[in-house]
Structure formats: structure tokens, C-alpha cells
Image 1 (cartoon, rainbow, N blue to C red):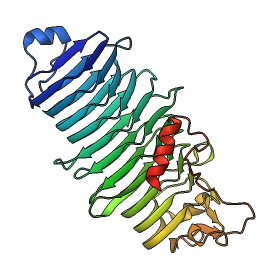
Image 2: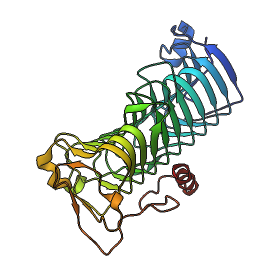
Image 3: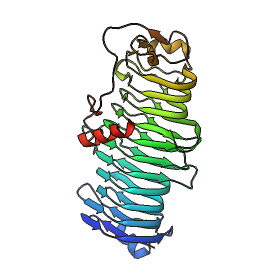
Image 4: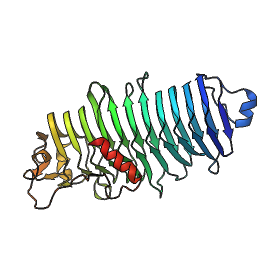
Length: 364
């Protein structure tokens, strides 16, 4: 079963309905000669080409396919498509530019998976992704590769993880703003895994539970150099925020205005973890906790000291924390960081203004 295949051309594909394309066989030899590859069957729409090939795919309905929509090497614009019961929803492989907006995806393995090449930028916004039936599934995965002078945006996506491991996996991204995304988890999952990369901004995202996520983690950040985490909310999970990696001086991380609610452990710093000092950043611990904050390398805690003003707000200080010198209550006449009502935070230019406003409305 094969849908539409394009090669080395611009294309507009709209209004197509495909169903029951669970292939897996190699293309017939004539098609392999045309595409130059043994593309497996079961792909609803497949576009192959180069940076000059702009492919627009919109308002299509695809269901029960191995892969719904895939672009390889092209500039890919995918908007307002409905993908149901697919293994892989929307895939961009080594694309030179990407816009994936307002799609509905129900998938088993990957909902949206995108890799950028050549320093292009990406906009992944207003998509609704539901993952079900595969234990190793990921809702949205992005890898934007080498640093780009442009700013990419991953804004206002909704991910429901009925099964799987990662709601969003943001791998090796640079200059990316992830704003107003909402991820819901079940057991043994991670809402947002941020791994490597630099100079990224994570604002006003929410991670909570679908049914029971008492062993899950909201945001897990591994060496997120020179990145900013502001006004995110995690609730009813095993762990709220988890940071890993030694980052200070020019690579220091800003952690401000985040709200942690009802966790076994609210904030965790792993072994050999440093983020730089967090002075009057206005993070809030609300509800019940087994442990408010834990540093697994206590001898490094002084390099990531949290200074809070309990007189301003008692919730700035976690209910319990270790080691004892990690948090310090110091009064300050100036106000601590406060999240704005419209989520238009300094430096967060990557998303549309309207996207940021809607994103914040989803988090309050």
C-alpha cells in the first residue's frame, strides 16, 4: 500500500483521505529507481528532495498507516491534518525548514519527530498528540542539530501519554523556545526531557497526570547549557523538576517562577550538578511533598544556592530540603521574580504573541 510520493519538487497536497496502509514491504523496483531509495510501504504521504523544494501538506485525513506524513530533505509545512491510529505520525528527516501546526495525531511509536539540518528553524505549534499501545513511545521529539541564528518554537502543543516513556524529547536544540505546552502522564514516564543543546527557553509549560503518575517526572533537564526555565507547573507526580549536569559561569541556568505541587520530591539535582545561584527567583512549593528539594551532590550545593525571602512568600522555601545550606532565607525589599499574566517573558521571541497568551491561559 502506497499513498503519495514526491521527489525533487514543490508540492501542495490537500484534501486526501487514506486508510489502512499498514505496509512494510519495499517499494517496487520502478519506484525505487524513481526515488533512489527503498522507501517502505505504509507511508501515506512521503516527500523527498532538497532545500529548494517547499512541500505544503494540509487538511488531509490518514488513518491506520505505518507512517502518516514524512518529509526527507525538503522544506516541510504540515497543517491541519488528522492522523489516526498510525505508528508514526509526522516525521521530518534532515529537513531544511519545518512548520507543523494544528494537527491531530493519534500514534503508537512517535507522534511528531523532526530533525533539522543546515541551520534551518522549526515551528511546532498547536498540535494535539495522543500516544497509545506502545510502551517505548514518544509524543514529540525534536533534534535541531548545529546552532542556528534563527529561533525555533515548540508552542502550545498538547500531549497525552496513555502509554510510552517521553511526552516531549527536546534533544540537542539551540535557540529554541518551548512555551505553553501541556503534557499529561501515566506511570514511569517523563513529561519533557531536555537533553544537551544551549540557549533554550522553557516557559509556562505544564506537566500533570492522566490517571496515576506517582513514579513519573515532570521536566528532566540534562546539561541544558545557558537555558531558562520559567513559570512551568508540575503537579501530582513523583518528581517535579530534575536537573543533571555541571553548568555555571556562561552556561548557568535560570530557574524562576516555577510552581511545584504535590510531589514525592519537588526538585532534584543529580550527582555532579551545578546550575549557578538562584537568587529570589520566586519558585513555589505548594501542597504536599515527601521531600521538597534534594541535591545528590551536597558538596556542590553552594554553587547552586537558592536565596529566598520567606517574609514575602512562605512557599518560596520548600517544606524540606537537603543539604541544609542549599536554601537560605534572606529578606530583600525588592520583589522576587513573578510570572506575568500574559506569559510574554523577556527573551521569548520565538513563539507568536497570541501563542504565548493562549499558552498562559492553559496554565492558570
